[in-house]
Length: 105
Image: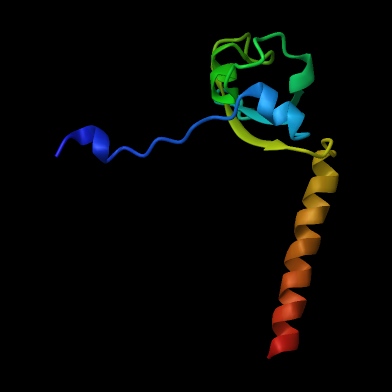
């Protein structure tokens, strides 16, 4: 059996599809400084049929002088919130999950 039959391929969404669906924000992580930034893909000057995965070839971290590449963490349809707000929302979800577990016992 050929090796390529074992490789699972996941197609990347084109920028046009993401924009049409209302997903405008792309979270990327730098491999050098491990910082996560949010990019508005409406401002990216690339061909509309460019796959989102291929954007990482052109994106570079400004803090690391552009040396390390970035990777995509997620694409979202809501505007970015501050890191503090995101942390508080995550902690609130954990607290609500614990409460619902306690209520079921």
